[in-house]
Length: 272
Image (cartoon, rainbow, N blue to C red; front, top):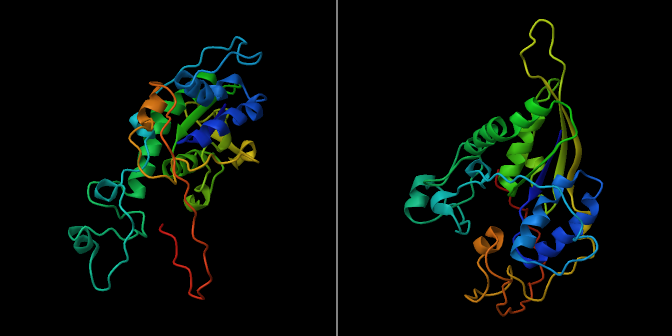
């Protein structure tokens, strides 16, 4: 069974990238077209020779287990500089949210990375394992669409299911997937041993990480959701992903990004 995990598209730029993505997914079983099919429900386009072709029904399953890490009180807040001799709790009390550097730390009301990893384990058990057990080594494809931090934890959970996996895995190396990029895993059920025939042993192969060839030469639209000021006329992202409404048509404002100059100072380590 192939398990492909995709970075969630969040703007009209990524909508265009998902259209390009279909061309690369033609060689993969048709279930991998789920992302584009979902977006076309919200943004129907005139039928073409390719889109008019009959396609097999795709089963969608939504689950809160696949949501991104919950940052609690720190949701949407900018990282602040950590003050010396001040505890994390004291920072939170002052409404400040410094970067967290361990897998056990979390913002008030939020999830730690260890908690996200446990949720990824639950997602595998409740959503993915059934496909492996039911279909054995048939060429079934399951596409999982979520966001970067959770996807990295889920990929790590699956890799560690390999019967020959030993040692540790740096989850940070699995982060940084671009929007609409995908990581592909080939997961097969091993033949049960004669001494323990009921044990489900898996073989996991990584076939691709952060694949995003479909983004080559894709130009960003002027302004864009990520660089324009808030515009109430723009379509809500929840309506976009839920299939409601028409394409957002709010005005955009182009802004230029400042050029970075070398300072000679050491770079701050990235949060864990």
